[in-house]
Image (cartoon, rainbow, N blue to C red; front, side, top):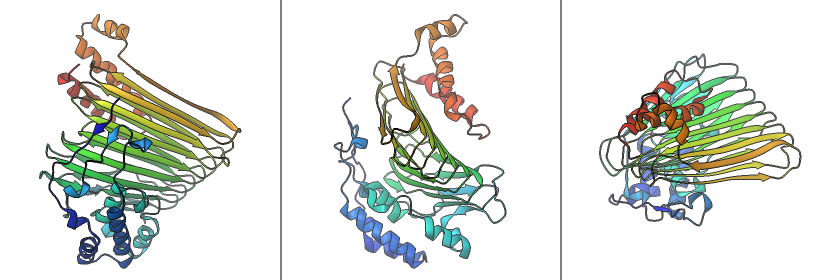
Length: 418
């Protein structure tokens, strides 16, 4: 499959991405010295780093060399992000700006912000580190749990040619639990989004992250999620990619603690010429660690899905177990999918390590069975795709989310080219 080339149609706003402008804006906002220094380093990295090219395997089918990030004007107001959630005693769920203003939480932000995802790693990450506004910080104290999910809502502005840089930092102390739902909304305007999510999961924690993407037709998203797991920690990431012209998500789990487990789930529902690109990394570092990856795509119209996943078992990860699966349903003759699951096993002492991928049309016998019960072909496809995605939300435990996904499938496939 030939790569998709992404171009820029917006104007030029390079000055806003420069070090002087970034530091001046941070000073105006009254940010502490350490954060201004962090932003300055990121701005320098942005100026020095090239755009990724298709010669890099994670970008093989998504060519962004013609995309100018600084062609988009950064959104400078803070009203587009809202954070809601019932906070346990001594916990925190709110903006990074408010957390920094508190002595205890401010020191936690200073310790962990940017510790997992360095600005120098790439052009999109550098832009985020330099220009994120507001941001969300979730802190769960030792032995505490959030009674309800924390919801971070992003409402993009209606103006075309704007850039959003969402930043989310989740710090879960030992024996704690939290679910965070990141809900994204935008209109039909041309919009660029570069997001970074960092998760620090202490020993015996349970952290769930849901990315609920309902972008508009002209939004292009580039997101990096990375988690570090302590002993017996569990981190679950689930992504629902429904809207957007382009969605590229990189989700990584560093299983450092003995007995830690990581789960990555993804569902992409494509139509028209939508482009989905998923990259996953499950890095088994500690002994007796376990990971499970399941990425599914149902593609109508001329939509595309790409999956590149690496499960790495280090020499130190004796007794590891891993599974990696990518399933793609082609709902039209113009849809395409490319899949490349990879295992890198550096020790012979593993419980099991497997991977698999499928690309193909819907089972005609299953369609015939449903049609024999009075459904037409489109209605039968809607039911089959809704069932196909159901496993993605297994154990996520966000009330109403399964029903929302089913409703989105029904609505989108009601008019999609099949």
